[in-house]
Image 1 (cartoon, helix red, strand yellow):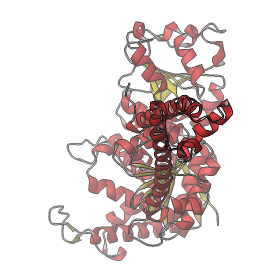
Image 2 (cartoon, one colour):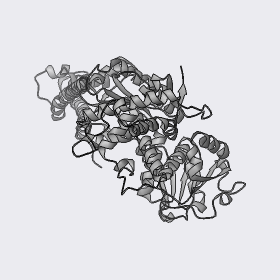
Image 3 (cartoon, helix red, strand yellow):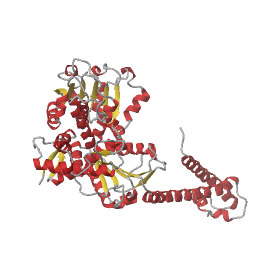
Image 4 (tube, helix red, strand yellow):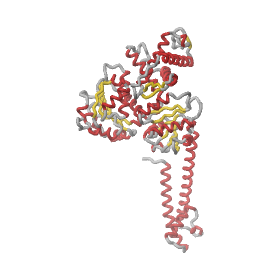
Length: 566
């Protein structure tokens, strides 16, 4: 085990202080008897302590000193000088850190001291990003020059200014309390730098998925060019995407979900969303076990109709504490065919691990088939890997730490505009796949990650304009919690929004160097529809109208709905 040099130096001087105290006392005892001075223990201790402040009375006599006292009279002041220098260094280092934090530029500000903030700081450190942390320092980051610390309440504008927020590039509010994170983001808006080509990006952690969706919907309706690019994120939703990237559903074998807390619900919706985009012979069998499985699934399918379209859902209302010997036992709740994947999704990580480790029927589905959600970043996975507690399960169990996996700056940075841009593209792929179009004739029929950058940018610009369009007709975006509030555009609204969409598309292409030409040619950047609304073909107008007509359906797949507010 290695120790920092500063720690070793402090230990050495602490030992030297003890040695000076002991040898000084012994030497003074001998010297006092030589000089005929009082040698009471308290007198000797008083003179001994005076050695550390350069003023021990017996040393005023010119008589030769004993060797022990000779050592102590140099060692004690040396300890005093080191203590003063080290104290000054620490004081000035703290002041220097505060000055560096305030004067930093294009850095990242992280607010919070919980596991989510720690995981995010670790990711940012690995990417060599300059970080200013408002909160206590993670142990692993102590002494790291990339991380500066500011103490105080991140909701205070003064604390944010001390963190250099006016010159920062990104702010992450990662406190456990969602309302505190929202307040931090709003405080940042008040002190963020005005103007500039790149406004501050702020991301606030919201632990409730429905509240997160509601706040994101309101964010899209912000008018004008804000000083703060604000968005909200939910770790369970991000983690569900990461988990299915890492453990994809690859065949028609059943899937089992145990627990429908926030993570379980997000996982089911994300699994259905991906299934909807992939050609498959039939619905995916999904068995769901939870204390309120039927009611929760019914509500999810009411909100996201495509879940029931692409999944054959079987629900069992079974309290999780009854496993594995409940009534009925777990074995009777599982599908007859061995599942390809079992996800244990309880928010309570002790309950999740208990369910996995006390249910032998879940162990025989193959390597990596049993995935258990835990919260603390890496705690369990590191322990299992180093101690090999699960070696006898043939690698069946995988521990998935939500904070560690979802605390990825790149994932968090995929804001609402990115989400809606994906939904627009996913809808386009699903619609054209249903019409039996193939990639050979339409290269755009690829997953979002494989889409060329210029097409992804086009989808983002279309998504970013949704709020402006809805506001123009007295409508707003809301989380899709009441699908019975049916919405349909009126004919004149379709025409108005189609014209707005064409004008937006026209501005984008002209800014990108396109010009009007008889036929579309990507190489020379020519397009026949680069003209005013009255100058384009009926087919082009109908395409813009279809874009507007499809908007409610596209938004519903992303968990949103349009509501009339005027």
